[in-house]
Length: 142
Image 1: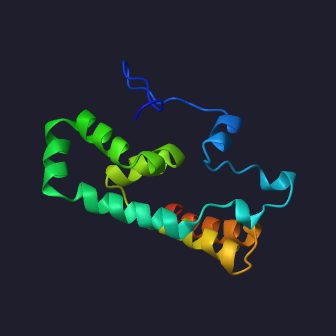
Image 2: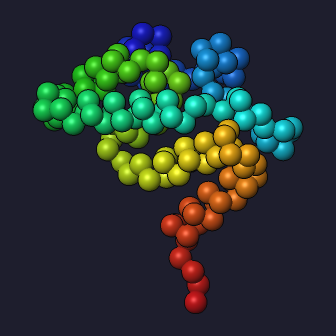
Image 3: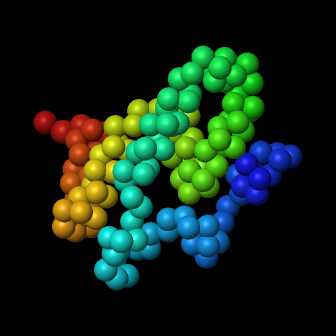
């Protein structure tokens, strides 16, 4: 993807907060520094739509073969095809194309939706997500 990764060593390019804002990316500040504006959050339905399209694409025989044959070309092709999504949500992009479990993503998108549309506070969503993740990854000591 032009301008995102250096071609020679394929390391990701890092951007500062102002650069990301100029790309219409999402930069969330520390909620302790002020009230989080739900309108600043990304639209979870648009993210989910792009994730679904990406999942469909990587499931095609052509892409499965390319991934096995040349993983670097596989990633580059997907970066080009999903350039806007890739620019805004690169770590999410990598998670999807790596075929990792997306359960936690769906929970986060649900919480963003609840904040944006159902009046849930950031603190309530954070607490609920924390409890869900805690129960998933931390075993009770009994």
